[in-house]
Length: 254
Image 1 (spheres, one colour):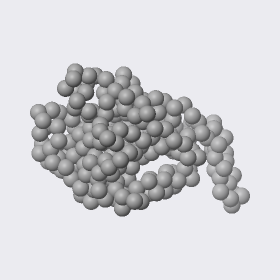
Image 2 (image 1 turned 30 degrees about the vertical axis):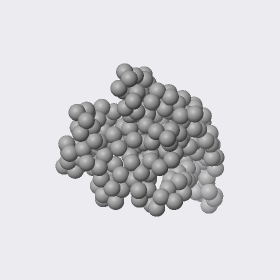
Image 3 (image 1 turned 90 degrees about the horizontal axis):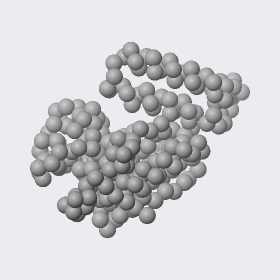
């Protein structure tokens, strides 16, 4: 399969699995990613997902052989956009665990996730201008939001990639780790998130994801609505009860 789906407890691990093609996105990857995200979103027992790439790199972007053959539209899905993920509306958090070349559409996949753990070998870039293209899967606006206008403009207009260490300095990634420890670090971050109430995580994520694109007024309203929804759940009562009883909470996700 072009996208493998693995479950570890409450974690879904989605693996881009075209290592011989540097995990370049073709129609099978796009449809496979959309199906994997459908499965993740629909299963209440899955609380967080990790997206990673098989082989030597995370993702080298679009499969240019498919594009040159006139199959470019197949690289996107109706709901998910490019690679089945870059325009996908989600309710649950996703961590990108990246290594090696993470450029063009691969960088845009990582930018569409909520957090990024980068291996020391990772490099990030939007080289589309070098081929008389534009980064049309969200990179042109997500990158400036992530790192600020000046460094983003330099990356976009030169097409040059930056190493993982520079990406960390700019705030593009959460952590840089040795390649051998990439998945351990991603799983550790997932575990810290899963220690919290899953519905509260989802509600908090949905408001925070809008923080850079909307004014305060609708975000105040969204925060209040999120609290109202949580107040009707079992976990809302479990949190204070566990604190009073001096024990770890047992979250049910309902």
